[in-house]
Amino acid sequence: MTASTSTSGSPRARRKVCSPHTPSSSPRPAGCPQVARGPVPAPGLCLGASELHFPDISTERGRGSSGVPGPAPPASVSRNLPVMIWIYGGGFLVGSSQGANFLSNYLYDGEEIATRGNVIVVSFNYRVGPLGFLSTGDSNLPGNYGLRDQHMAIAWVKRNIAAFGGDPDNITIFGESAGGATDVWGTLSPYNKGLIKRAISQSGVALCPWAIQKNPLFWATKIAEKVGCPLNDTGRMARCLKITDPHALTLAYKMPLAGMEYPMLHYLGFIPVVDGDFLPSDPINLYANAADIDYIAGTNDMDGHVFASVEMPAINKDKRAITEEDFYKMVSGFTITKGPRGANATFDFYTKPWAKDSSQENMKKTVVHLETDILFLMPTEIAVAQHKTNAKSAKTYSYLFSQPSRMPTYPPLCHPAGLPAPRQDCLQCHDRLLDQLCQNWVRRR
Image 1: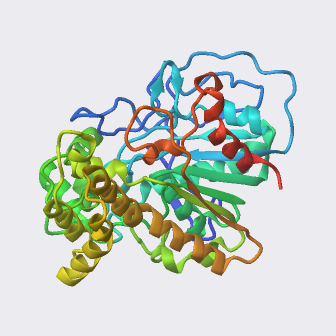
Image 2: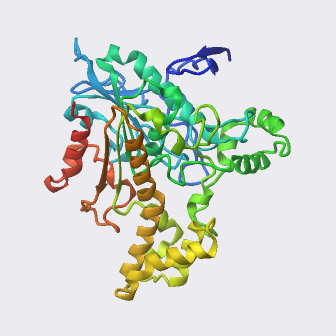
């Protein structure tokens, strides 16, 4: 593999990157290597090309990287259309640009929003898990490879989108969960200076406690031990890890989903790190870099349910009860750095309403509210405040999505509730509020 250099979108020193892999002529899966819903990794290499959707126009390859041809494009296309780049979530551990397939409709199909908003929607794949975020905490393996993938994709769009009818000076990045958090990282990194005009974060910002790794060497050592690499020298460890089979590295980490002593966020090992380069400092210190980028951030009313249901499965079961002891243990896990005093104060604050209503329904909602506040709502409010404080020409907006879903699930506004249905025929008339919200995002100002 030969090496070349790139400075696309970067004010920093030239950095070596690999030459592009020769594309396969046969159909291939689009996702990067990752652990599926079990110990088996998703197939495919990180070779998926960007998928572009045009209003009233289909790409020649159709959706995704399936290789199935779509309708032929028209002789001419619109010019200077706004561009929206979608960044998927998945806890920095799983995900792909297409998303899950529901009844032959991909969750992240950009056709509807492209057509209704008269914009170009672009999606791409980025490395996740150990391949995307393993770091030794020093220059041997600095980490943030998934974020660099995102930067390269955004820079490519900036350089080339005019050829597809897009306006390179009107690019909005938007994402959900980990994708929302990396939206913020994208606006804060000096590498993306001048590439982005607007950003939208749904249920995730860079200040979320699950979006920044404070002890990357701990997790790198765990992976190195499992694949038989040296443990006591990060240089030797890095050289060994670089020649280890990527699927073996991916399988070396498995997120525990039961029997956890602490809340799940403590087990998210491979997430962004402050590397002194792509992310030069803690995110709270970098908001001046986003002073000219318009920003929208928000949460769903019960975003924390996705974590709470794993840590306390009883909240989803009518015949299983939770106790004050269960809740206190959870609170202690979140306030571990504050000690017993912090745990007691937090417990008293959240359980005060139980004096009037100690029903299981109310207690279970309290669990979800705690996780929503700590993992999503409070970090988002701080992020919005930081952006507003540092903004020069940029506008700052926030939202709280509280329209109950009509899907028969508890709770009505869990973590992915802010994602639009991929096709309009999936929606009832009373469920089109979210569609209208998305249309508002893409309107020209």
